[in-house]
Length: 129
Image (tube, rainbow, N blue to C red; front, side, top):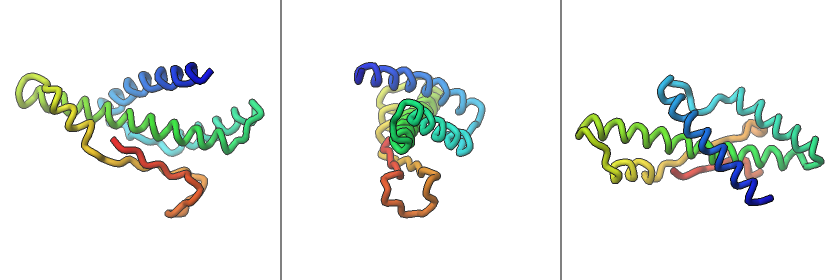
């Protein structure tokens, strides 16, 4: 079962990479709070339907969203780096892409459940890219 869960997340990540490129091409934002909140509530409802604590569903969604956003940002940065490398030299150097992907940026997600700036419930996620 655990292996299947990881496989599903890998499948989701592959879709997210395609979405990332589409958003980059069309200028759409990374996060759309109204959509993320609907999805968070859906995960909580699915948890209830499966006799799980809805807080587990919320936490699982938040962790998944944070990782998928990290993947989306990395894919977009990689695409930008490739485009710039091609522009400047006519070819892509792997080291240029690697520099972008390992630049040590941080990505923060805040659960809308608690609007306070310092939340001790563990709902803030910092992802390193």
